[in-house]
Image (cartoon, rainbow, N blue to C red; front, side, top):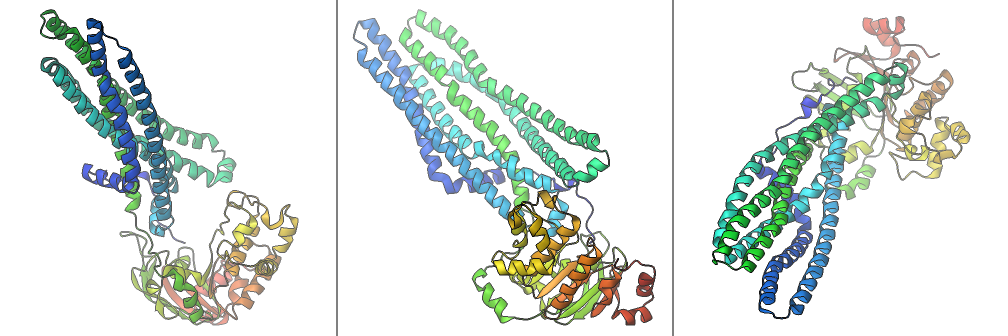
Length: 598
């Protein structure tokens, strides 16, 4: 099958979200959990209120000490205040952490559901490793920004304003000194925040590159080893890891600057207040208890200001993750069936084999690429076997992709049972089709799971029948756990021929009205090929079978043969007719490009 050129990470890079779009996307994730976030916010505010009262209680304690009054009541009140505030804050922190995990879970469920519904064209364009990193590492960054950042920003702002009000109540002059220092340092911090966002986004992209590189290696593990390419591929992965490290360090550097700025602001403000306040105490303008309370409020400010800075830092990190997640959400997906309940009745209403017709079909994978199909037309009645032959790149496998609606025709119409495939609900269309791909993929799991993958409702009798027809029953007898034996990653514990027979058995269990076999016998020995060919011949009497084949033995047994070349249909006929009438077909047969079965 012709495919688009290999994608690069540059193709997946899109513009970051604007601030408004980021906030909107964040609100969409938080909205279902808003009451839990509100509860966490209230708990945080209660804890902040307890902290706000402590300096005033300390001032009263100092005044009572100066006047010789008892302080037992104030000490008890302070203790209760501290314990209560700590307990409420701890509960609020738990609620927020639990909510954050729920946000991440919801994001991952949404992304996975969308990724599995991507159009094939999108899947071919974007490296799978990059998509996987968006589900794993990018969604992890939502944990902090979706709850902690929101609550930290709210409580930090409220607590800061409340502390400033209390400081103004104590002494306006000392407040002016404090705000002057804080604004000066805060302006410098504001310049750092965009740098954190850029470094975080670059770091996440580099993490995606690591996944891409690893997926590339593990997808061809034997080839890597046979080529002695371990060191070269290790270097490739390490290069991506170094890029992630470099951007991560840069992000950590700016976060450290932002994180220490609040402490610097408070320390500088402390020195300024201590100097100015000491002078005001010495001159008798304020009592020493006021200076002590003011300094306590100043140190109290460290926590809410830190929360604000952390919230902004987390927001910058989360904005980078949200941009990458949003890019996935903008990818084109296949339509979903809105009438799933009607599917069994629909299938029962159209029994028997399916007919297929192509009417002047044109197709190209992307704008700017050459056409794979050019005015392709043919008509295949129900039942019987049709073989598609032609040179490599002629567009044979693309016929199957258009029937399955993996791709949409860019011109003309593809009809199944006289109905344009674009008018079929996708689940209904595909439920009528059995499809065996060129590389006959087998999924990690047990043999049974692979067999019933396309037909989860298959009975044990159905399975036994298909096993016998595809001569897999002897394989099952050899396996230590029979049908429940794990087959390894991508069927690594099976031979190529066994994987191919499993793929065929999986398609047969679906009991399709239309069976598409793309080089389904290319890895079989002569005995198994002959047996499978007999099965397909029997099946063709009651269903429609379409085969892409290069073996002469498969072609000669077909009811009709479609010869394709350069994206066009050259001729349609039987083997004998085409040998006599079509020079290309005669040449293919004579030069063994249609290799006879061994």
